[in-house]
Structures are given as C-alpha cells and as structure tokens.
Amino acid sequence: MTAVDETLTSPGTTAAPAPEPTRPAVGIPDPAALVARHRPGHALEGPFYTSPEIFDLDIEAVFARHWTFVATEPQIPEPGDFVTVELGRYSVIVLRDDDGEVRALHNVCRHRGSRVLHEERGSVGNLVCGYHQWTYATDGRLLHAGQQPPDFDKSCFGLRQVAVRVVEGLILICPSPTPPTDIDDVVDRLRPYLAPHALAHTKVAAQVDLVEHGNWKLVMENNRECYHCEAGHPELTCTFFPTYGYALDEIPPRLMPAHARYLKAEADLARACDERGIPCAAIEELSGQPTAFRVQREPLDGAGESYTRDGSAASRKLLGDLDTARLGRLTLHVQPNSWFHFLADHVVTFTAFPLAADRTLVRTTWHVHRDAVEGTDYDLDNLTEVWARTNEQDAAFVSRTQAGVSSPAYVPGPYSANEYQVDLLVTWYLERLREHLGR
Image (cartoon, rainbow, N blue to C red; front, side, top):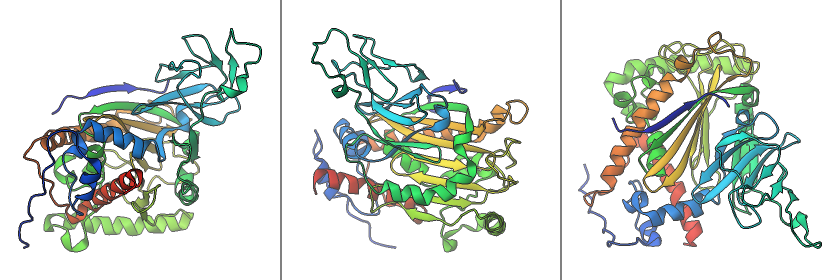
C-alpha cells in the first residue's frame, strides 16, 4: 500500500476502436486547446492531472471563484475559535467572532502582507500579526497599528473579508468578491435534508488528515463512483450496497442478492422517512450551474443503522430529535471538493484541499452528539474504522492512477454507465474552465 501522511486528533469519487487523441506537445500545455479537444464521456488528458500550470488555473477558475466546504461549526464552537485553510495560494481564517457569528478572513496582514495566523487551529482573543503587532478584532476590524500618522484611518485597513455561508452547520467559503448567487437556492433546498441531524449541536470526535499522492480531481473522481468498491473496500461494503450506481439491467448476477436486500431496505427506509416527515428523494444537479450538488437518503446494508462492520449504530446517543437509528445514510456531494454522510448517530464530513498538481489533503471529520461520552456512548475505533480504512485504500488507488496518467502512454478511456457522476464532475469542471477562459 502506498505510504501516506496521517495524523489523528480529537477535538482541540461492439464499436470500432476510437482513434487516439492528438497528444499535446511537450512543454507548457494550452488549457483552452485541452478543453476544446476533450472527448465527452471520456477521462481527462494527462496534463489536467500533472501540469503545475493547470493546477494554478484550477485554483483561480474553481477554488477561488466557487463555494467550497472548509469546516463545520463544531470545529469552532466558542468565540475566538479558528481554523486556517489553504486553497492554493489563498490562506483563509475561518473563525467564530465575539458575537458568535461565523466569519472568514483573508490571512494577510494589511500592513506588509505577513500571514497573521500560522497555526492550523486554535483560539484567540484578538488576531495579532507577529511581524509588527498590527492587531485585529475577530470580525476583522483593525484595532491597533502603532506609529501611524494622526490622519491614519484604521477603518480602511481591516482584514479582507471572505464570503461565507453556513448550511446547517456546514461552513462554505468563496474568496471571489462576486461569489455565485445560486448558493441561496441550494441552501434552501438542502436545509430540510440536513436539519434533522442537528450538526451544529454535535462535537468533533476525531479528525484524520491524509495526504494523497494524486491530483485533487483524481481524488474526487475516485469518490464519485463505486465501480471499484466491491473489490477495493471490504469494510465499506459491509454496509454500502455494492450495486450503487448500477442501472438495473447492468447489475451482475453475483450482485442480485445484494440488490434484493437493497430493494427491501429502500422500501423500509422510505416508510420510516415518510412517518417522520424527513425527505429522502434524490436531488441531482451536478453540472450546468456554478453551485452543483447531489443529495439523497439511501439505505444501509447489515443492521442498516450506521457505518460499522455490522451496520449497527456507532453511538448510543442519536443526533437531534431522531428517535430511531435505522434511517440509512443521507449522502451529500458538493462540487468541487466535498462529500458528507449524515447518519442518525453521527456525521462524517470529507473535504479535499489541493496542495499541488500531484498532492491533495483529504480531511475527514467524525461528529457525534455533543453530550456523547467516549467509552460510554461510543468507541472511537469502532466509530472511525470503516472510513479510516476506506480512505487509506482510496489513497492507494489515487496514487496508482496519478502514476499512470503521468506516463506518455496514457490515453483517456471511456466512462462506464456507473461512472456517470465522474463524467458529470468532469463536465462541471470543464464548464468552469470555459467560463474562466472566456471560451
């Protein structure tokens, strides 16, 4: 298995053969030409995954201009609590201000540009730049600059604000001064799905940072399909039905017993949701708009309660006002870099932070009821085992793929029917590049 960097902390995706595409010349790739010659229904060409220039374009065209999930409210529970996140060259402070509001600020001092905060997380009274002691309030206002002329106007030199939206405990940011306005409609439609889990009233039980040796798009493409799950994820498929993503007429005979279990579990889940007024139908809008997403509540195999080896609840203390653990998994994907599983007993959030053309930080955070007690209500190893193992396995797949697409022999192949969400991710991504390049 590929070595990975990992830290664990507690709170503190019969036709004639097609001709090969024209290969780009050696050197700096032409992004517009790469986009123009992309073959629909096929994987991207190698430079999209290997070129530092394309990586820089991704930051500007995607991460700097669109809503990105970066943290949850339980990660910053008290005034002054903060996390810092890196999106390419952008460093952003996400914190709770003195009034309890969630804010996002560019981590750049207004004096001579030094980083203000250097820690990944912590708690502050004020934000103090260690270079010349310029001091800012938690809402970004400049409080003290020192040795300035009498006519110096502190109100003109506050930390630059970053647009932020909080969706039932999920914190999304957009560094652009003109973020996509469709976020308001997306938030309104997501709230009924997320609200029953009361994420804002949970606490962080564990967080794992995993540096995967692959481009961020490979990380997300791997996440967006389960073509590889049956062979690649034995812990996950204890509860994750392996027929996910298959059309009915494409399910292999060996998986038909699992499909029969799925149909029964799906009917039971629909009945339980209807009785409780909880939405479960899929909303799928993964391309064609700036803020693209997919949400659906689906059944789990085994005991049908949670992501554990036997499918039973990992925590005795259910979230919000939920009265049964057997509510399957509410799965949410948000382009470009995040996915979530909301269970009755806990919530798992995932976000992929692009580090370089061939490296991505995947941050996984497990949340339990804020009153749940480790060792009494939940066992940490049992809570985290399935997704910790699955992430390690995915990291190996991504690393192998990064090595493959870096080869001169790589030619993009066609997507299968159950990789349609990968195709939609690529479609959305290319839409963003065309928009940015004016093509």
